[in-house]
Length: 226
Image 1 (tube, rainbow, N blue to C red):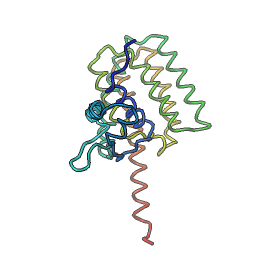
Image 2: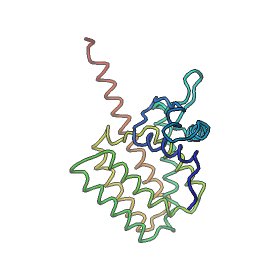
Image 3: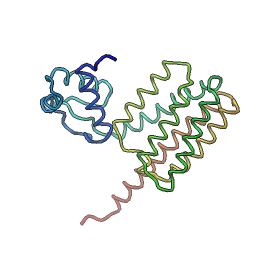
Image 4: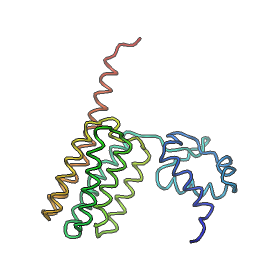
């Protein structure tokens, strides 16, 4: 197995720390310290940061430099809306392709999600949720649609915090909706029915988060200033 290039090493280090939340939104990515830590020049680190910038995880501003992308509410809204469309369609394309093994794997993951509800960890629940949908995506025969799904998921990583952190009650509904989606796929339901169910599943989470944000904002506005 070929050794990783220096640029790839830098990319993986920075990407892992962004995903774990070690490098939080707004964190400045200074080239020299990262390069020193990895024992390399700043050139491959710069290449890695440019790659992360292309993925939307890093921004570059004049007089500021590279920093982990800030969370934008509109970006969350637009990304979730887009994912609802492309994930819904990707899932519908799996109807004639998905195997019993894939359905069984997805069902097992969903059962682990259900069992985790008693000792709820939103980050772990989100990881399982991504794994659940990824199993189904494996059967999508259109690589271009899959590319759009993966791009949307990469943009969502900028947020890092799980939606279920804000609306934990949504997790119970999500597990039940997974059961329904699996039943539709098992029954080889019409593609449009599967697409609608998958799209509404994603939008339900978005709507729950938006409602939470609205309520939080209202409470803040109603709270008298000290």
